Image 1 (cartoon, rainbow, N blue to C red):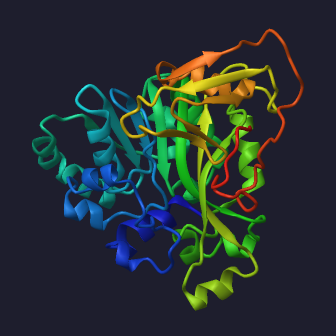
Image 2 (cartoon, helix red, strand yellow; image 1 turned 135 degrees about the vertical axis):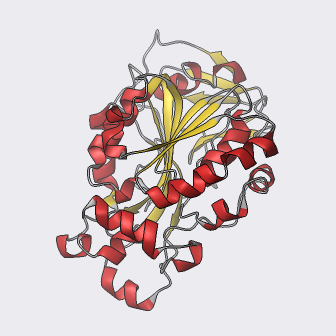
Image 3 (tube, one colour; image 1 turned 120 degrees about the horizontal axis):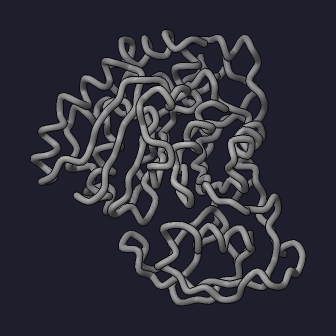
Length: 346
């Protein structure tokens, strides 16, 4: 699939969220109340041109410098701009001129609404981030909402993201994944591609690509099955199944291939404003405030060597190794349980 096909679909065919033919590029209504409040401050035209599939607003954003890959008309950019506050900054990148025109048209409106201006937009390809003049190692967080599946070179996207992140930074993004590799004929279907289905990666290939880029130990945060709800298109994608999943990828030196036990534990202080009672690192690490929570070495680093360090007390070190951490969680979003019965494990 060529860039031009995707640009036409999102710039000319789709004029609003209602023009989508499936539920793949839609975010469910369930979201924290503080995010609903943030979205109420986003211009209606920007909201109307939203085509994401998840929530890409992790905890601990105040003062952060964020890059949004495939920002479209800017809904997430303007939401994140409020969460990072006047000391933070958000940069949006998109290849579709029509979408960026909407985002830029309302920059002054949002600046007046927020009381500060802290966003900018670049037209370009997320596979060629090095051509946009962005400083390497300059972003705390990179987000993307249902766009990587549309990319023509997904390895290049993750390579570029890794290059632009600061040490200890993370890529936190939602996308569509398939339960197997998409057949070539399906991948060339322009409607299925534009609807975020036939460009989806097989989830296990995604893990390989992420690790090749330098993101060891990818963590699945949330997932939900996609039901498509279009009988004609359901027949065209059968027998494949799809899921919308959110992953977080940390740029950390020293992460190990497996979850290793060093007898470590953490205590969450409950100091993140958006997570006063429990902090969710991923689908099997939901850490209640004030409770000693055993962790593997990788999880320790994801908390101790990132922006989350000030919000935790750390117990132990790496001086003694006890083998593989007992009760390791699965990697497949098709077998995960959303963490409803989460226990201390990696």
